[in-house]
Amino acid sequence: YNYVLTIHDIIYMGETSFKIMLILFNIIFVAFVAGIVLFIFQYRIKKKEHNKQLQYKDETHKKELLKTQMEIQTNTMTHIGQEIHDSVGQKLTLASLYLKQLPIADFDQLQGNSIQSINEIIDDSLEELREISKSLTNNNIQNNDIISLIEQLCARINNLNKCSINFEYNKKVYLDTNATKTVIFRIIQEFVQNSIKHSKCDLITINLDQNENNIVLSLKDNGIGFNINTSIEKGIGLKNFRKRAELIKAKLEYTSEIEKGTQLTLELVNYES
Image (tube, rainbow, N blue to C red):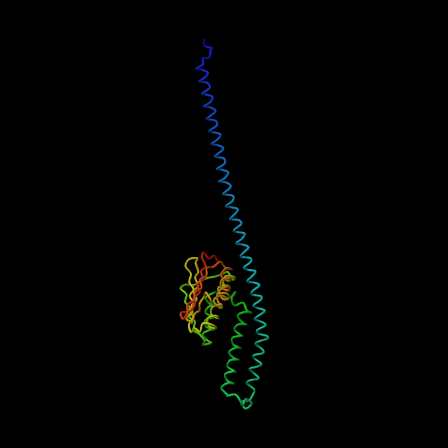
């Protein structure tokens, strides 16, 4: 009797085996799902690290490219500055000497003050050419900090008595990256030149500030302004500013209103020297 399995025993053993198999299946299924989750997690970590490496390489490549562009630009400017000095400057100097040596009597159809005005124009042109040539050919940008560069520019413009420049800065801004310093200074130069040439302004304000790692440059003139949506400045001047800003990954805002002047704001966020 002890060795005879009843139907009840067989059914009980079958249920037990089924439960065991079900438990094993659940364990295997859970382990399989956990393995997939772990694989996906590790894949995402590796993908994130890979993307960081790609981003780092891309940033490094862009920095090297910017450095190369700045070197090419510097070499080009040096060549242009030398040409200005050797060619145009010498010709204007020669013209000035000839004009000053001619007697007033030889100019029956001209008044003496007209000749004097011509002399002054040539002398002013020579002075501006010397300053331009000097700024292009020497290592002024590399050898000076951004504050000194702007102060030199302001002093030079103020001495010409064409327009007044007011330079304000709340703290010492330090840029040890020559490429970034060059781009910022060239933007300031171009804005000042455009304002003097086109806006008929008598005051230009430059403000440079640094808040933690954020550097903000503000340029403003009190000139006649223009319609930025229709003016040629939108196609040429603004394009030049944006192109320079993109080189150093800076945010640029450029606005102008009729009879209210023009303003440019450049912001470097999280700047790392």
